[in-house]
Every structure is written in C-alpha cells, then in structure tokens.
Image (cartoon, rainbow, N blue to C red; front, side):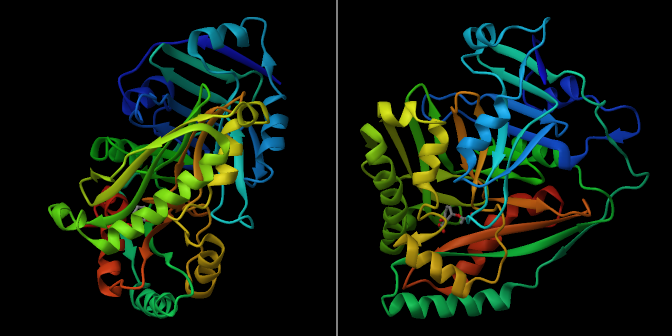
Length: 419
Ligand SMILES: C=C(O[C@H]1C=CC=C(C(=O)O)[C@@H]1O)C(=O)O
C-alpha cells in the first residue's frame, strides 16, 4: 500500500485540529470507533506530538508480547506515493519515521490489544504539521447526527460488591499475602444516541490540560500517568500512586500509607528500567500533581537507554514489555498481586490499565497508562468507565470507594453526570 505525506496547516489545539483536518459532511459526525487521538502536555523536556487518526486502514490484533513483530509487519506494508514527501524528508522535518501507528494493549496477556495505522493521520510537532494518507482507500465514512439531544444515564451498581472485594483483599494483605494490590470497579454510561468521542476528548482537553487525552479503538480518556515516553535514546516516565481530594495535600505528603503505596509504584518502574538503561534518575521525594478532581503523589523518572535496548526491535515496546504492569495498576510483589486481582476483582478490565499511545516506524513513541477512561461498547451508545485504587493492609474500604468516585469524575462530568 502507498502512503502520501504532505505538509499541512498547523493548528491551535485538539478542537482546531479536528475541525480543520477532519471536517464532517453536513448532518454527520465522526464515527467514534474509527478515531484515534493522542494529545497532551510535554513530559519533562519531551514535547508530545498532536496525533489524530481516522479510518481504520491497517489493523492488527496484538498483545504486548507480539507487538514487535506485529508492528514490523504493519509498518512494512507502506511505501511513499510518487507525489509524497519521501520518508527521509519527513524524518528530517519532523524527527519521526513514517508511518505512525496507534496502539492499545490489554491489562493482561489474554486481552486482545490493537495496533493500527489509519487512513488519514494528522501529525503536529513543534517543527510543523503533516497529513499522512493511505492512497486508494475507500472514502472516509461518517455517522449521521441524531436529530435529538442525547440523554445520558448512569448505572453504578458495583459499589457494594466492590466494598466486599476490598474488605476481602485487605484481609489477605493483613495476613501478609502481598504488600499492595490495585483493585478496580466499573460503572456504565448509557446514551440515547451514538457517543461522539471527538467531543468527549475536546472537553477532557479543556478540563484536564495536564493529562494526556487518548482514544484508540473506542478506549478513550485523559490519563495523568505516562508509562513511558521513548525517543532519541531516552526514556521518561511519570509514576503516580497515593491520592487525596484537592485541598488535603498536606496530609497526603505525611501519610505513611500513601507514601509506602507510592514507593512500591516508583520502585517498580525504576527496577524495571534499570537493566535497560545506562543511567537513571528520579525525584528524591515524590511531588504533588494537582488535578481538578484529585491530587496524587508523583515521581518523574528519566533514563538513558542502553544501546542494546535501542537497537533490538521497537525500543518503546521493549521498555513496555519490562514495565507493564507496574505497581500503580497491579501491586507488589507483581505476580502475587496479579493473582489477588484475579481472586478479588469482578470487573473485566479489558484495555483499562494497559499501555495506550503511539509509535513511529522506528519504534519510538509514548504510552500512557489507560486510566480515567472508558471503553465504548459495540452498540456505540454505552461506555464502561473504570477506576481503581491501590489497596494497602491499612486501607479503609469506604475511603477507597470515595476515591474511585473521584477518579470517575472526569469522564462522568463530560456527560453531565456529576453535580
Ligand atoms: C488505578 C488508578 O490509579 C492509579 C494511579 C494513580 C493513583 C492511584 C492510587 O492512588 O491508588 C492508582 O495507583 C485509576 O485511576 O484507575
């Protein structure tokens, strides 16, 4: 297949990019299941590209373990058209290797993930903007705008069973089975009309500018946690664990429970990255990341990747294979926590809490942790929203339940479902 790359007009943010480069015919909206987005702030000194993909051209099922070969197959299907910028010219302008793909992997190996290169991909970096389009594909398709305003309904019937699960897990933790385990629960949003994820992400971008907005194959949200940004031989990660409601940060920095919970998560990242890096640094003490709905203890980690990590396959994938699942979404020790999740959690995580992001042909890119998000269902009118908490031996189940409510708030607000 052939790919045409052309410079295009730069835009001022996500909303502007969508209206300028993905205009819909009158009376239609974008089909949420065909939309991929990556948008968000710089992490340390690494600016994030703004990426929007539409039209599911090249789609491969993949797990993190198969991702290297899957990505090589996917990217090698494309060569430039005669009237395209060459891939070398595109690289010299953007520092990205064409083509560019989106991915989203499951929390566990059994869950199918996806790698895809889309029919039209808009790419904007600090150096300019480009459109990457697969030649000769069928025309892009859109869905009709319903004639009536949507009505949203929330089904939140997991609170009681989750409290029971947390109580059982706390007993196991107090008995010394593990030190920390993350437990998640879900709620369902039902809409009277097809959900427009482009609108959802525009609202999240406005309300949560310090988070990374993402959408891949119907999984969409705004995550505050960067699992790994891998570019130019460097890896950067933001680890979050330990949470309070805004205004209670002074207690958070003194809470032994939260500091310990955070240390497990930060150590899991540093320990996984150390063998892959020649040099690794991190904040000595966690800092506070303030979001509108919650504040977190945060640690930023940065490393120089060893030559072997960079030269074998896609470096981002190699890093993710070692990192995932960190103790921010699984627990400590990892294998025991994984078993405790299987024992106590009744939620189907799917791709929630897995890596989600983008990658260029050379395997550089970024993966956020798919948190504060929802999965669009097959009917395109309902979404499963998920939120989890790091449970410790001294966790209070009611307080953890309140924390899930706070973590669900960004997505619920978009639908007007919180007061
Ligand atoms: C698992 C989630 O959050 C993780 C990330 C930050 C803080 C967390 C906590 O304090 O429990 C969790 O480890 C979620 O948002 O669903």
